[in-house]
Length: 335
Ligand code: SAM
Ligand code: SF4
Ligand code: SF4
Image (cartoon, rainbow, N blue to C red; front, top):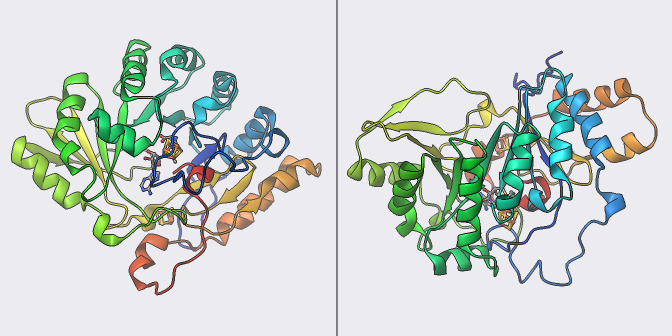
């Protein structure tokens, strides 16, 4: 069955956050002054077990989901993640299981994840400059760990790997061309993402967004590019290919050119709350329904009703909003 929301948008993709913990403190996501040593993370009993995640994923697949992306926090901190990948991979009707990671633990986990059936990998990489990387991750684990993780992932057969770079005005614009050069040489697909006003603590201002159009100008001044249409599931990027044949690059203009009209993504937090928008303030507590002993068909009805009522289009309305709205933190629902 394919469930449709109030704006005719199907439910096709599910992001599952497997932990709210992270070994980075990227200031745009988990600024250290708010998420320091004494931050209270969810405890084990609050987090969905692999059995519960698999059960919910099956229910979502029954409503039209074709692609699951595992995320976090840092998903590779979740113990035995390859076991979950293998369980999800066994779900009939699910076409793809993918993962977004900061890459710090990939060196040892790339091969087990591949063996478990993970289809594709996205690694976040905001800078190739050692000092800027340290400032942007606010952690002692360095850039070389991520680069070693990328090598291991390439060797394990993940390719092309997607690299996500969030650009901030006055912070890492100098990384645009070096990152593009690196991705071209290594056979990765780089995507530049506009800095978003997710969560409540990252001091977002429109002036700090580097518009995708500006990034395109910079890239086009250096290399010949052509835009192309990619026939993929839940594409949010604008795609360009390098005319010299060295791969492609993507631009995700979530702020300057919102794509709410085509948004077919649901998000499940580590504690089992369903969010129908990245900017939602409230999630629907599926864990309680699950642990209260409801049947699969009862759970399916709950999810189906929630999606049918969905009206979210925050990014299209952003500029019309006069007061800041309460909203969920990015590391709870994983981007
Ligand atoms: N820890 C993993 C990682 O960083 O790849 C997965 C979770 S992280 C929340 C998922 C993605 O969200 C990352 O690519 C990160 O750069 C992006 N992200 C976090 N905060 C953001 C913001 N304010 N604007 C745009 N992207 C953001
Ligand atoms: Fe951690 Fe990813 Fe958030 Fe950075 S963006 S703090 S790596 S969850
Ligand atoms: Fe989807 Fe909400 Fe983002 Fe719009 S603002 S694209 S509805 S997640």
